[in-house]
Image 1 (cartoon, helix red, strand yellow):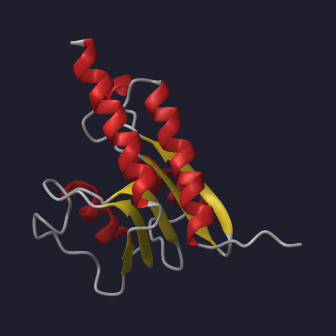
Image 2: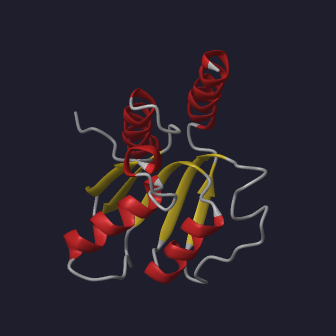
Length: 149
């Protein structure tokens, strides 16, 4: 029996990356980039570890995918990310010309939609894939952080 390579399958891979971030004390956001049913990039937040505000999961994944492909454009690629991209990441995704973005949880305060950031006109977006799981991980992280301080 073949494993179905669908949005849920790839979002689970992104959630695995978010768990790695959680374990490192990073905000638990993970991302994978897929082309032709193949994961070509995996990443998670590294802002604390690298002491770099731009080291979001999406930015790390964009760089890894571009390196894999040997070019800066991510046409025919899909990014799966556990939280709606912020405006910085949306801007980078715009310039990468990524074909599709699938995210889990909406970021009502800092997400690209709330801030009015545009994506490339040819980019399609799907939100809400495994939203409960991603939201739970984020909530758990911030509750634990508050309890430590």
